Amino acid sequence: MSIPKKVKFCFLAWLALSTLLPAPAAPGRRPLLLKVAPPSAEVAAAVAGAGGAVVQELRTCLLVAVSPESLPRLRAAAASLAVIADPAPGELFFLLHTQRPSPLPIPRNGIRCRSLEAGVWLLRTTDPAFRGWLAQPFHLKALQPEESFAARRRIAAPSADRGSAAIKPRSLAAIPDLVAQVSPGRLRADILALQGFKTRYASTPECEKSGDFILERFRQLGLDAAGDPFAFESFYQSQNIRAVIPGKVAPERIVLACAHYDSTSGTPLVFAPGADDNASGTAAVLELARILAGQSFDFSIVLLCVSAEEWGLYGSAHYARQARQQGAEIIGVVNLDMIGYPGAEQRVLDVIGDLRSEWLADRFIAAAQPFVGLKLLKIINPSLTWSDHSSFWDQGYPALCAIEDSDNPFYHRTSDMLETLDLEFAAEAVKASLAAVAWMAQPLSSPAAPTGLRAHSQVSAALFTSRKTAYLEWDANREAVSGYHVYRAEASHGPYTRLTGQPQGRTSFVDPLLLPGQAYYYVVSAVDGEGRESNRSEEVRDDENN
Image (cartoon, rainbow, N blue to C red; front, side):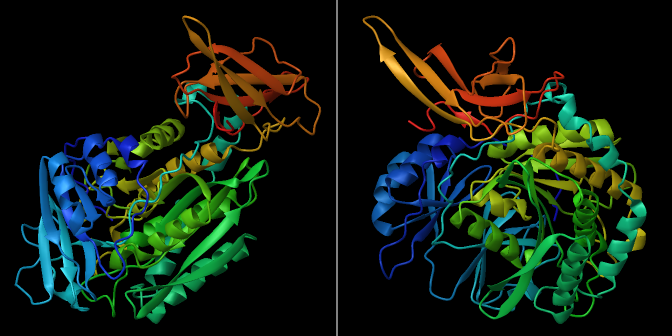
């Protein structure tokens, strides 16, 4: 859901955050919540050193949970530090996004709001009916003070270079035909069907029926699909709906497309049609499922429709947390939220990411732009946490949100109906997402991409210098190939330089005379007897198996 105003922003040095591990408070005590600035590498390191944990990263500050004993150490490292909450049992905490000067027009016992930065507030409450007292429109993200960002294990991206010119034609050959299958008529029918439930407000029977409708649609396409129930705010239950297109080469690696199917309005229990927000995104995921179901890819594609987004991103938080706990290798998430209202003149699709996900935004735009007339606008801002991509950011996964660049006057109103939408614009947004998802999952090529790439490195020291040598091995392709090419990059995700002039017949490679202090990243491709080159393998780092 969008508060789609552009803001200038600074970047958090996310590398320091990658060292943070969850740090539980002392038994029987809840941590203090602090607003700490600036959001720098030094401050993040000080939080970790003080035994604290980052609960939320924002553009201008960090929301941090620490024990009271850690305050003196942290004060010495931060330019600005304020204790903003001493959580009490039974309190709920949310990030609240609103453009209103005050989110609470009338003071109310049991509801407290504190500004964190422009348009972002920390809301704490013991009132289960607090939503009815807030100024519309608003959006919520539920927070758990005891939880921190997960340990940010590096997730390798698909191994194609940045930029469309770097992608091998074999990988792209199928995408134009897939994009051409996107149907505005199918989008219309699915949006109308979802709108027909009258409301899809999580906790209502109609929301659960709409989830069952999505599940049945996935199963009609022959997909492996299931509902995943979850509880939220103690009293309520809903379900996420997931379908999988298994990868043929590395099925453990996942490209995920998602949207929330629940809706809200001023009368959410009675009528919340939610055509743009977010039947449009849900219809897009169903259209991706229809077109991709019969295709083959190197990596798996997961199609996910989540619930309780309007309550605080509960469904996506449940899925992303489970994915991290299970060690799922999600290499990229494309979240579709409100893609049907371009405004009077603008035909712009925002592609929103955080700094860790910038490569994914670049990849999305490079893959999609050749197939659409829309302007695709990259926005990198960690404060834009108001939709389900943010749940994946919290778990260390690269994720982006594709969303219309306009203010929809029907947002969170009973007038958010199909007739207000531009289905041609929505179809263009679906084409862009389809191209990007298919590109990242890599349509199966002939020959197949090599598998089992492994690397280790060794540093040799001499009297005046030292050098590193990288050793690579991989599994031989099952089908006959004439050889393999090896590629190297100095940054994860490329750009790559080919190290082999001609395909080599061996399934090993030695790369000598490397700089000891530099990390190197490798991928391998196979070449058949007709000179056709495969997609590239999974990426490995030179010291991955040291």
